[in-house]
Image 1: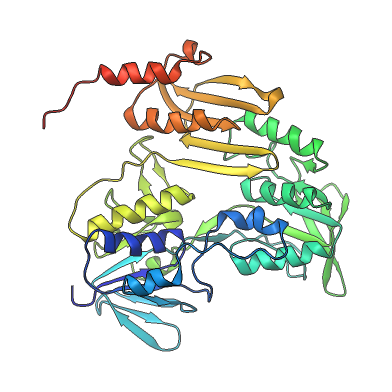
Image 2: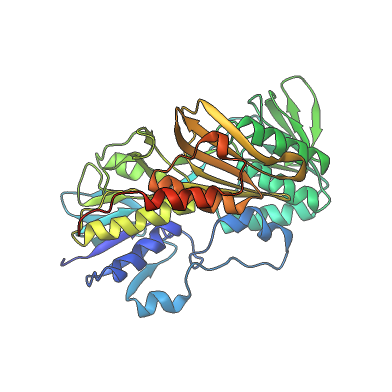
Length: 414
C-alpha cells in the first residue's frame, strides 16, 4: 500500500489497531491521529481511582517509545474535518491533508448533552477525557454538594467515589430504577441499597427542570417536582452518542453508529470502523448492536488489522464489561436482551452473588457482583456454547461440569 493505513482516534481502539497492524506484519505506513494533546491513556480509571487522588496522572496505554519503535506516526492535537473518498485523502485541521489506502475510524463517542436552562453555567460538567476528569476533580475539591444526572455506570461510579471522599451526593435518574439499560433489576436494587448505605441519595423517576446559578456558577438543580437540590457541581452522565458524523458526511452508511460487516468494513470497504462508533450484527444475540466497552474496542481493533492484512475472520468475541461502584465490582459477560429466565447464585447480603440469564435453555449472559470466578468461567462457557442446567448452578462443581462437557465435544478434523 503506497499510502498506508490511517487510524482516526487515539483511544483504546485506535492504539490497539496500530499495535495489531504491526503484529500482523503490516509494513506500510501507520498514522494515528488523536484530537487530544495527551499521550493516549486508559479511560476507565478516570471515573474511579483518578478522582480519589489529586496527584494521580493518567495511565498511558503505551509508552512513547512504542510509537517510535513501531514506526507509528502519532499526530496528537489534530482533528479530521473531512474524508475525501474520491481523492483518497483526509482533510485535517490547519489546512493539512493526508493520503490513505485504508482508514480505521476509531472515533468513539461523546457524552449526551441535556438542553436544560442553566446547563451552560460553570460547574456543570461531563466526563469524556482526562481534561474533563481533572476539571471534575478540581471542582469537587472545592464543594460540598454534588448532583449527578444519570444513574448509569459512569454516574454511579463518580457518585460512589465522591461520596467516599466526603461529598454530599444526590443522583437523579429519569427511569424507574438505576442501571435500567445496563443491568438486571436484582443487580440494580443491590447497587441502590449499597449506595444508600454509603450516604448517596438516589432519586429515580425524577427529572431536572432547570439549573440555578449565582455569579455564573451553578448553585442548585431544581427537579420537575420543584425540589431544590443544592449543588456546587453538577455532573451529566446520561449516556453517549457515537461520533459518526465524519463517516455520514462522506456518504458512509450510518445507523446508531457506523454500519460495519463481520470484518469491520463499512459500506466503503476501504474505510473500517471499530469501537464505540461501530454498529454491527452480533453473532451471539442476532441483533444489531453498538457496544461501549474496552474489550469490544480492542478485539475489533485486532480484527480490523487482520482484515487490512488480507484475512477474512469474522468478529466472534464474547462481549464483557465491568464497573467498580464503591465496594462492588460488577462484571458482565454476554448480552441479556430477550432473557426469559434468571437464576441468582450466591448471597446479596454478603455483597457477593451472580445472576445467570437464560433464553429458553440457552445461557446468554452472566452478571456478577464480587464473584470474579463466575465471570471468568462464564466467558469460557459462552464462547464454547455451553449452557449448564439451571438446577445445577448452585453447586460447586460448575467448572467440572464444563470440563466434562468439553471432553464430549467432537474433535474437528485437522
